[in-house]
Image (tube, rainbow, N blue to C red; front, side, top):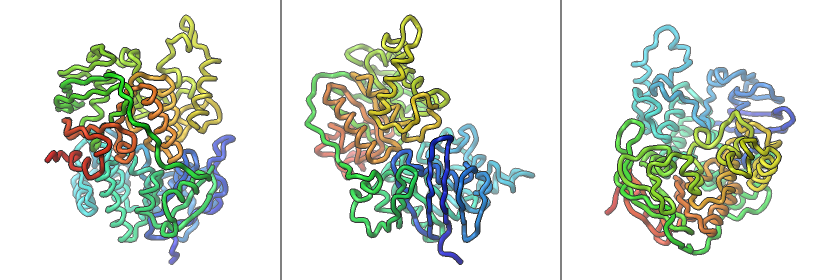
Length: 503
């Protein structure tokens, strides 16, 4: 028996003229957690999509469990024992949990025995401490629960090798701990995990070895026990030293820009999501919004940006009552919005980058004259934003869907910050970004604040909130648990409030 569960030899993958992976060699040992690290667009997801059968036209060989394999389609990969949890979940929201689990499985073709499947699924959830009601619809699950469902779905299909693509991007600190406990339990039973991540502290904590990709090639494979600190990993990833802290002067407060008074609203199921939420943000400060995903942060942002109606309460932007404003009226108040779901609210995948860049401002005189778009100016402006925010793309005529997730995030963030807003609502601004891009975007948000923007930043990254915020408001089950000054904000002070404990 070979001690390696996977060997990928000389893998090269091209998309037209773009080489995404070049002559990549990767060896994964049985029972290890192996990190795949690299900047946005370094080829991590592409390499794993070749392994999982999502892409079939590549050069090179793949050996799985000692056998040369020709993986044609993800069904083929699943049959071999390879499972993958994608960065953007592959779930059907209108179906129940158990219907998603058994979808496409052979044994369920003749008679659909959902009761037996639900029993097996529930036992699996108990075993790994990730219990989910099998009969609830996926659209009713929090993001963290959907993540757990994707992992359990792969294990239900007997995955020996589990690929996790940015698995902690949408999880809270408690959920991350739970995920890591589950990964430890899996590897102790002989499963193997490939962990794609940008989070250096997580790689240092959970992984045994790490392969670094840079510009589609393998830059290094290292034993984590031999790596001194995060700085060393960051330098391997980007090929130079990286500053890991964001510099920030004390806040210069210049008067209220955004005020929310006793705001209440319902969620999509008609259940109260916000309960008398009040806050104010001054020009020149960052207010961090902290809490476990699904505790009203999304609804708060949607009410402020005109995407959801409140039931009672008031919202004031620049002193104007904007409680009943629609999204366009809100944006006209000088508000920029980096949304939590870039695919749903931030971009149109089937449109070009330059078209996406002009989605909000196309009526303005810079962008159009008498209803005719000024494409020359739009393309030059889009090119500048892509250069400033290091968006890796052949040109601005590229479809947004063809960019990696991190590059999509960078152009959405760039577009919103370039509007020079008076109020910035930033939700998970660095989600899915590598350390270099994260630090650049964090510094740009601080720059906006220093220029007098009132910033509301929602994040599940506690370290990011503690580092960037001037004050942090903690939410639990739609209520404000407290507001903590940056100087007093630690994981120890915020953690209990996030769990609803105020004593």
